[in-house]
Image (cartoon, rainbow, N blue to C red; front, side):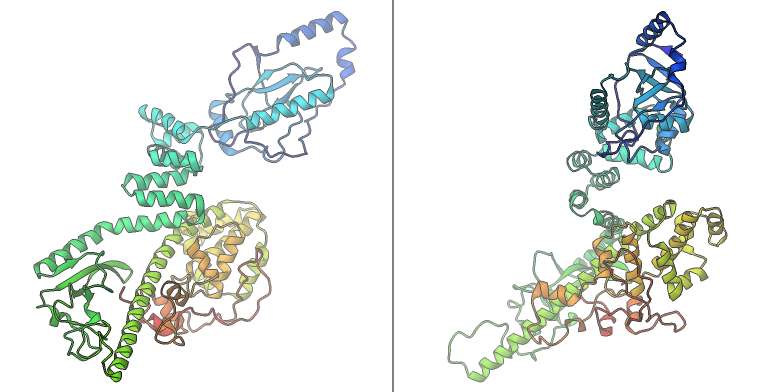
Length: 634
């Protein structure tokens, strides 16, 4: 069938995959061949018949001819590395056909040879639908000129195109929504398969945000990132929305973890706000002045009670109790967030609004003195001066320790929040990992190593019927049968991937909450394996491989301990330590006394895991066991 139509303009495929910009290569795809005897086709024709045939061919130039894609020949093409078919385009063509013509010409025996649009032809073959061909004149007899023209045309066809902006897609989808199409219906009509509904929802969410659209245009954010930025802007959280944009550009590996942490905080915000209002009412009813965060509890006239003694004549080193101070006109309190049993609570830190005015003294001030104001004259007794210097040093050391405890507490709390937020990111990656089929480099060595050691994680997961693996694969079951069915029907490479997946899930389940600072060797092996297979670890996850020391964090902020450089600053209270760390620090576990002390610590820089299993001591703790006994007061 032949018809003459207006030639449609080239368009960018909706799925963003068809006819992608090609990678320049010196190689070319050779043309498909069809066996024929050219002489037998032309020798029997008279000159008049040949003239008529040429006239018929010329009349066909610049017309659209619909061909069976199996009958056309794909000519030589510059695209060599990404000319495969893709399921999204095949599904779209199955539903709507091929709506953009390819270019081609008829050779001497009448066969249509495709010069531009090889991926459309390949996808049309799988979709089993006709392909429209824009018939051109045959290439020049000058082989050099014809080759140059073909290469330039093929490169420009792929390079000289601009895809739809986020705003364009949003506008288009909004029009479809106006026709009562739901996101799932739009995705179905677009031929989007799994994840299509989420794709449409992300476009609608991100496109409605001026900030997300502008950031996408300027910084080339992914659609998922733009949707998250729009989510935070919609709730009025512009500070974190802008921080997400910065992370998307500068630290994309931390983007999802930050977003998850902030979502958790937002979900708790109403509860925390209610707790704050309740405690505020209680303090106001008790005639307690509430001090805001701009009033420092460390310096100036306002001090917390743990820094004060009742009077200058009270014993140096003593502290005022809340009961003793409740009748003071300067009785006040700061509200602060504490963290107890995994939840944020609001607490009061009591103090005096002006300790000098109300005749109190700094706890470590010399006897008879309120603070450390230098002596006015040189007539003081040398013993008094020496005592003053000792008291001032003791005060400085106590202040340093209070601040160190606060830094330690905040460091643990903030790191735990980030760690909790990283689990969803790893789970999503593991689910995607299981869905792929490609062979895995280093898989056999990794599996053999884990089976040789028979670690606690693998044993527990088997005993619990691979709970996490079932959850991530959405089998709807907690047993082994659905997993067994998947594995039994898989090809060799896919079965190996399932084997690795089950092992990784077992190690994920055994990844304790304090792994970011007190990792076991198998935790380090797990993160090394994930990175080796393409996982982009966030900053908090990278600490599993190279833990930070709280001593270094404190020293960086405060400098060394002024009282005793030889003492370990980690002897203080350590914030919100989990039961896992306390158990690990004590050297125990819940594995019937089994020990994994012979597990190998894998070199974090290794891409492939070593098959050798070397004896090594347990992972060194970054804190001593005494630091895990309670929470510091921030």
